[in-house]
Image (cartoon, rainbow, N blue to C red):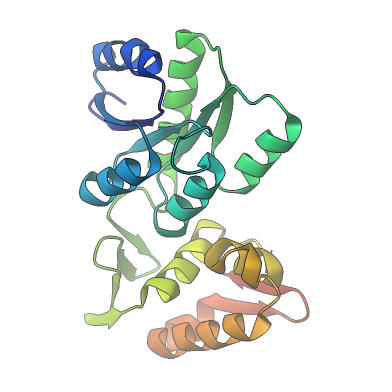
Length: 224
Protein backbone atom coordinates (compact mmCIF):
# COMPACT_ATOMS: atom_id res chain seq x y z
CA UNK A 1 0.00 0.00 0.00
CA UNK A 2 3.04 2.28 -0.04
CA UNK A 3 3.02 5.30 -2.31
CA UNK A 4 -0.68 5.95 -1.79
CA UNK A 5 -1.91 9.46 -0.94
CA UNK A 6 -3.74 10.38 2.25
CA UNK A 7 -5.55 13.63 3.06
CA UNK A 8 -5.80 14.49 6.77
CA UNK A 9 -8.72 16.81 7.48
CA UNK A 10 -8.35 18.07 11.05
CA UNK A 11 -8.02 21.48 12.72
CA UNK A 12 -5.76 20.21 15.52
CA UNK A 13 -2.09 21.05 14.71
CA UNK A 14 -0.85 18.30 17.01
CA UNK A 15 -2.69 15.67 14.97
CA UNK A 16 -0.86 16.80 11.85
CA UNK A 17 2.48 16.94 13.71
CA UNK A 18 1.91 13.39 14.93
CA UNK A 19 0.45 11.78 11.79
CA UNK A 20 2.38 13.40 8.94
CA UNK A 21 5.87 12.02 9.81
CA UNK A 22 4.40 8.67 10.87
CA UNK A 23 2.53 8.21 7.61
CA UNK A 24 5.40 9.49 5.48
CA UNK A 25 7.72 7.00 7.20
CA UNK A 26 5.29 4.31 6.02
CA UNK A 27 5.78 5.69 2.47
CA UNK A 28 2.42 7.45 2.14
CA UNK A 29 2.07 10.86 0.50
CA UNK A 30 0.34 13.13 3.03
CA UNK A 31 -1.73 16.26 2.38
CA UNK A 32 -3.18 18.54 5.04
CA UNK A 33 -6.46 20.43 5.37
CA UNK A 34 -7.44 22.37 8.49
CA UNK A 35 -11.03 23.05 7.48
CA UNK A 36 -13.76 21.76 5.18
CA UNK A 37 -13.37 24.30 2.39
CA UNK A 38 -9.67 23.53 2.05
CA UNK A 39 -10.41 19.80 2.08
CA UNK A 40 -12.88 20.10 -0.81
CA UNK A 41 -10.37 22.13 -2.82
CA UNK A 42 -7.62 19.54 -2.33
CA UNK A 43 -9.94 16.63 -3.10
CA UNK A 44 -11.06 18.25 -6.37
CA UNK A 45 -7.48 18.97 -7.43
CA UNK A 46 -5.70 15.82 -6.29
CA UNK A 47 -8.26 13.07 -5.49
CA UNK A 48 -6.46 11.35 -2.58
CA UNK A 49 -6.53 7.58 -2.21
CA UNK A 50 -7.90 7.84 1.35
CA UNK A 51 -9.19 10.55 3.69
CA UNK A 52 -8.76 10.77 7.46
CA UNK A 53 -11.58 13.02 8.64
CA UNK A 54 -12.22 14.73 11.96
CA UNK A 55 -15.86 15.59 12.70
CA UNK A 56 -15.20 18.79 14.68
CA UNK A 57 -14.12 21.23 11.97
CA UNK A 58 -14.20 25.01 12.46
CA UNK A 59 -16.17 25.93 9.35
CA UNK A 60 -18.50 22.96 8.94
CA UNK A 61 -19.64 19.83 10.73
CA UNK A 62 -17.67 16.81 9.61
CA UNK A 63 -20.81 14.75 9.06
CA UNK A 64 -21.99 17.26 6.44
CA UNK A 65 -18.58 17.26 4.77
CA UNK A 66 -18.59 13.46 4.73
CA UNK A 67 -21.95 13.45 2.95
CA UNK A 68 -20.76 15.97 0.36
CA UNK A 69 -17.56 14.04 -0.39
CA UNK A 70 -19.48 10.79 -0.66
CA UNK A 71 -21.83 12.23 -3.29
CA UNK A 72 -18.98 12.53 -5.78
CA UNK A 73 -16.11 10.29 -4.66
CA UNK A 74 -15.66 6.65 -3.69
CA UNK A 75 -12.27 6.68 -1.93
CA UNK A 76 -12.15 5.22 1.61
CA UNK A 77 -12.90 7.67 4.43
CA UNK A 78 -11.85 6.91 8.00
CA UNK A 79 -13.28 9.15 10.69
CA UNK A 80 -10.92 10.16 13.52
CA UNK A 81 -12.95 11.78 16.26
CA UNK A 82 -13.12 12.42 19.99
CA UNK A 83 -16.88 11.94 19.78
CA UNK A 84 -17.53 8.57 21.40
CA UNK A 85 -21.34 8.43 21.32
CA UNK A 86 -22.89 5.53 19.44
CA UNK A 87 -25.14 7.96 17.58
CA UNK A 88 -22.15 9.80 16.08
CA UNK A 89 -20.51 6.53 15.02
CA UNK A 90 -23.68 5.17 13.46
CA UNK A 91 -24.37 8.45 11.62
CA UNK A 92 -20.83 8.53 10.21
CA UNK A 93 -20.87 4.90 9.08
CA UNK A 94 -24.36 5.22 7.60
CA UNK A 95 -23.23 8.46 5.94
CA UNK A 96 -20.48 6.72 4.00
CA UNK A 97 -17.47 6.41 6.31
CA UNK A 98 -15.56 3.15 5.92
CA UNK A 99 -14.33 3.12 9.52
CA UNK A 100 -14.51 5.13 12.75
CA UNK A 101 -11.59 5.47 15.17
CA UNK A 102 -11.91 7.27 18.49
CA UNK A 103 -9.28 9.72 19.68
CA UNK A 104 -6.89 9.05 21.30
CA UNK A 105 -5.77 6.09 19.18
CA UNK A 106 -2.65 4.02 18.73
CA UNK A 107 -0.56 4.52 15.61
CA UNK A 108 -0.33 0.78 15.04
CA UNK A 109 -4.09 0.37 15.01
CA UNK A 110 -4.54 3.34 12.68
CA UNK A 111 -1.97 2.00 10.20
CA UNK A 112 -3.61 -1.44 10.25
CA UNK A 113 -7.05 0.02 9.57
CA UNK A 114 -5.58 2.22 6.86
CA UNK A 115 -4.10 -0.81 5.10
CA UNK A 116 -7.38 -2.71 5.41
CA UNK A 117 -9.39 0.16 3.92
CA UNK A 118 -6.97 0.58 1.02
CA UNK A 119 -6.95 -3.16 0.33
CA UNK A 120 -10.73 -3.24 0.24
CA UNK A 121 -10.77 -0.23 -2.09
CA UNK A 122 -8.19 -1.74 -4.43
CA UNK A 123 -10.10 -5.02 -4.68
CA UNK A 124 -13.51 -3.42 -5.15
CA UNK A 125 -15.34 -2.84 -8.45
CA UNK A 126 -14.34 0.83 -8.60
CA UNK A 127 -10.63 0.43 -7.92
CA UNK A 128 -9.26 2.89 -10.46
CA UNK A 129 -10.21 5.85 -12.64
CA UNK A 130 -11.34 3.40 -15.35
CA UNK A 131 -13.00 0.05 -14.70
CA UNK A 132 -14.84 -2.52 -16.80
CA UNK A 133 -18.00 -4.45 -15.94
CA UNK A 134 -19.25 -7.03 -18.44
CA UNK A 135 -18.02 -5.00 -21.43
CA UNK A 136 -19.03 -1.57 -20.12
CA UNK A 137 -15.96 0.60 -19.51
CA UNK A 138 -16.56 3.51 -17.14
CA UNK A 139 -14.25 6.50 -16.74
CA UNK A 140 -14.61 7.85 -13.20
CA UNK A 141 -12.89 11.13 -14.11
CA UNK A 142 -14.69 11.97 -17.34
CA UNK A 143 -18.05 10.54 -16.21
CA UNK A 144 -18.36 8.66 -19.50
CA UNK A 145 -18.81 5.09 -20.60
CA UNK A 146 -17.62 3.01 -23.52
CA UNK A 147 -19.86 0.22 -24.75
CA UNK A 148 -19.21 -1.67 -27.99
CA UNK A 149 -16.97 1.19 -29.14
CA UNK A 150 -19.60 3.86 -28.52
CA UNK A 151 -19.00 6.67 -26.00
CA UNK A 152 -21.85 7.33 -23.57
CA UNK A 153 -22.09 10.70 -21.82
CA UNK A 154 -23.61 10.69 -18.33
CA UNK A 155 -24.73 13.57 -16.16
CA UNK A 156 -23.13 13.65 -12.71
CA UNK A 157 -26.35 12.37 -11.11
CA UNK A 158 -26.72 9.56 -13.64
CA UNK A 159 -23.14 8.52 -13.03
CA UNK A 160 -23.58 8.60 -9.23
CA UNK A 161 -26.67 6.40 -9.53
CA UNK A 162 -24.96 3.90 -11.83
CA UNK A 163 -21.86 3.86 -9.62
CA UNK A 164 -23.94 3.22 -6.50
CA UNK A 165 -25.74 0.27 -8.11
CA UNK A 166 -22.43 -1.12 -9.37
CA UNK A 167 -20.84 -0.87 -5.94
CA UNK A 168 -23.75 -2.94 -4.62
CA UNK A 169 -24.16 -5.23 -7.61
CA UNK A 170 -26.13 -8.38 -7.00
CA UNK A 171 -27.86 -6.77 -4.01
CA UNK A 172 -31.38 -5.35 -4.13
CA UNK A 173 -31.30 -1.76 -2.80
CA UNK A 174 -34.52 -0.18 -1.58
CA UNK A 175 -35.90 2.93 -3.24
CA UNK A 176 -35.31 5.07 -0.13
CA UNK A 177 -31.73 3.83 0.32
CA UNK A 178 -30.86 4.70 -3.29
CA UNK A 179 -32.49 8.12 -3.05
CA UNK A 180 -30.69 8.89 0.19
CA UNK A 181 -27.30 7.79 -1.18
CA UNK A 182 -27.58 9.62 -4.51
CA UNK A 183 -29.77 12.65 -3.77
CA UNK A 184 -29.49 12.99 0.01
CA UNK A 185 -31.83 12.31 2.91
CA UNK A 186 -34.11 15.25 2.05
CA UNK A 187 -35.14 13.48 -1.17
CA UNK A 188 -35.51 9.91 0.06
CA UNK A 189 -39.26 9.88 -0.64
CA UNK A 190 -39.04 11.37 -4.15
CA UNK A 191 -39.71 8.14 -6.04
CA UNK A 192 -40.26 10.00 -9.28
CA UNK A 193 -36.60 11.11 -9.36
CA UNK A 194 -35.50 7.51 -9.22
CA UNK A 195 -37.85 6.24 -11.91
CA UNK A 196 -36.81 9.03 -14.26
CA UNK A 197 -33.08 8.48 -13.82
CA UNK A 198 -33.30 4.69 -14.04
CA UNK A 199 -35.15 5.27 -17.31
CA UNK A 200 -32.38 7.60 -18.52
CA UNK A 201 -29.72 5.01 -17.74
CA UNK A 202 -31.59 2.19 -19.44
CA UNK A 203 -32.07 4.27 -22.58
CA UNK A 204 -28.43 5.34 -22.70
CA UNK A 205 -27.15 1.82 -22.06
CA UNK A 206 -29.60 0.15 -24.46
CA UNK A 207 -29.69 -3.64 -24.29
CA UNK A 208 -26.97 -3.59 -21.61
CA UNK A 209 -29.19 -1.47 -19.39
CA UNK A 210 -32.23 -3.65 -19.93
CA UNK A 211 -30.17 -6.74 -19.09
CA UNK A 212 -28.36 -5.44 -16.01
CA UNK A 213 -30.51 -2.72 -14.39
CA UNK A 214 -33.24 -4.76 -12.76
CA UNK A 215 -36.38 -3.77 -10.86
CA UNK A 216 -37.66 -5.56 -7.77
CA UNK A 217 -41.31 -4.41 -7.82
CA UNK A 218 -42.35 -2.57 -4.69
CA UNK A 219 -38.84 -2.82 -3.23
CA UNK A 220 -36.08 -1.22 -5.31
CA UNK A 221 -33.46 -1.80 -7.99
CA UNK A 222 -30.29 -3.81 -8.45
CA UNK A 223 -27.45 -4.32 -10.91
CA UNK A 224 -27.57 -7.97 -12.01
